[in-house]
Amino acid sequence: MIGLILASASESQAVSLHVDWVALITAVASVVSISAGLFFVLAGTLGVLRLPDFYTRLHAAGMTDTLGAELILIGLIIQAGLTQMSLKLLIVAFFLFITSPTATHAVAHAAYKAGLKPKLGKYKAPDVDGGLK
Amino acid sequence: MAHFLAYFNLGAAFLIIVSMAMMLGRLLGGPTLYDRLLAVNSFGTKTILFLCVFCFVIDRPDGVDIALLYALMNFIATIAVLKFFNYRALGVPLIKDQTKAAQHKGGNVKGAHK
Image (tube, rainbow over all chains, first blue to last red; front, side, top):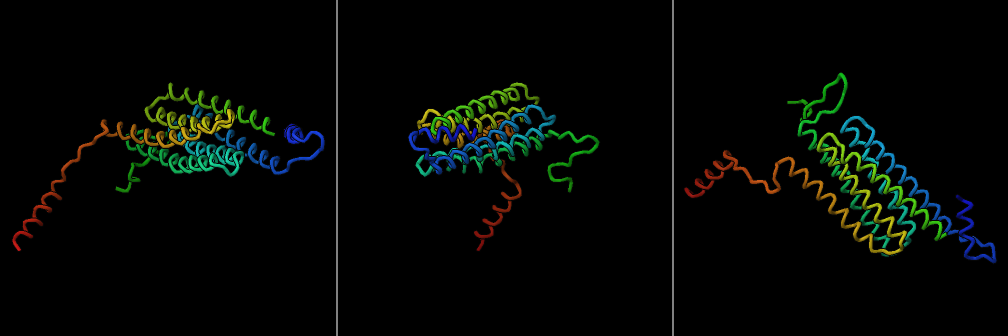
C-alpha cells in the first residue's frame, strides 16, 4: 500500500523523482484514521448482530458508533485541509459527539424503565432507583 | 495521490454500506422495540458517515450539508419515538398537583387579607 501511495505521489512529477511529503503524510494520516474508524464501525455492527442481550448490544453499538464516526470524520477533515468543507465536517463531528451518547443513554434508560431486565445469570438486576428505597 | 484517495474513499463508502445492510438484520429481526430503535439510531449514524465519505468520492461538497441535517434529525427522531412509546402520545397533558394548587390558593388568600 505504501508503494502504491509513493507511486501515485511521484506520478505528478514524473520527470524528477520528487515526492510531495506534505501530501504523502496527509494521505497516510487520513488513511490510517479512516481505516481505524471503519474497523470500529464494523466491529460495532458485528456486536449488534451477535451479542445475546439488549444491553450488551447497546454497549457495542453506542460506544463504537461514537468513536468510529469521530475517527472517520477526523480522517475526512485531514483530507479536506483548511476549507469550508472541513468546518462543516467539524460541526457534524461535534453534533455526533454530543448526540450519540445522549441518544444511547435515553434508549437504555427508557428500556430499563419499561421493565426490560438484563440477562445476568444467577444475579438479579436492581430497580431504577438502585434498590435503595 | 488523488486517485488513490478517491479509490480508498470508495472502498470506505462500500464498507459503510455493508455495515448498514448488516444493521438492517437487527432492525428487522430485533426481539424488542428497543433493539429496533437502537438499530435505527445506529443506521442513521452510518447514513451520516456514508454521505460525508461519498461526497468526497464524487467531489461535490453538497452532501455534507445534508449529513448535518441528518445528524440533527436523527437525534430528535430517536427522542421523539422514545417519548411516544413512553406516554403513547407526543403531546402529554399536564396533571394538576392538588397539594401545590391548595398551597398556591392559600398564599393568595393570605395576601388578600393584608
